[in-house]
Image (tube, rainbow, N blue to C red; front, side, top):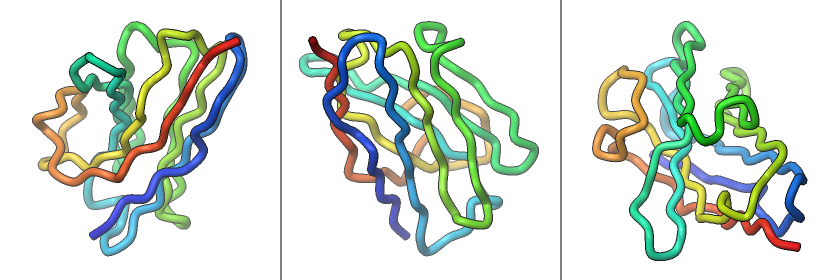
Length: 123
């Protein structure tokens, strides 16, 4: 069971990035998936979560309207489109699978994590 993220990088404020998370060893439609991030010196926080059953989503208030989570069940991939990025969005972004099929931003509700991908927003 593995999650592999990609798509991070260095971007200027106001720029965009698209993160991808490929799941292997299990199918997306059996679990919910989320994106969480951890900035230096801060606790890990939930960014967004998607139900791979009905497609319901939830966002942290700080990213709502700028970030979009989506999935492609055929490719076993979850995406996070990030627009209008700000310096405070700088963090390592993790893709993770929920323990149960809940829609959640709580890191304790996730039991399988990718290795993370670094996002840096700076001019």
